[in-house]
Image 1 (tube, helix red, strand yellow):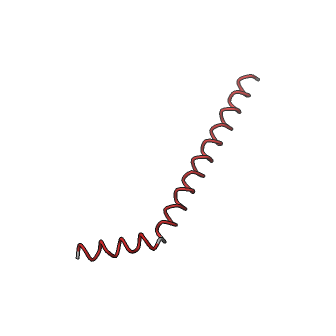
Image 2: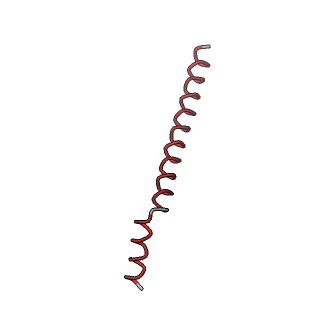
Image 3: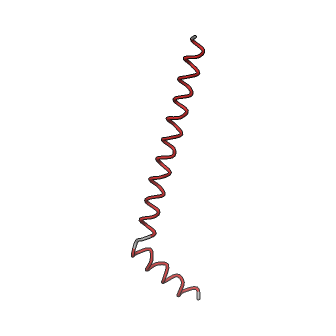
Length: 53
């Protein structure tokens, strides 16, 4: 019985960690997406394209 409880606890902790990692990845993805729509980034990229062409 004790072994089953320990395994159940480890299993639930594992899922909590996985969901936390997924949430962190989603936050990072959203920040990159906002940065991608940034007028400053677009201006910089336009400048860089003109510089290298």
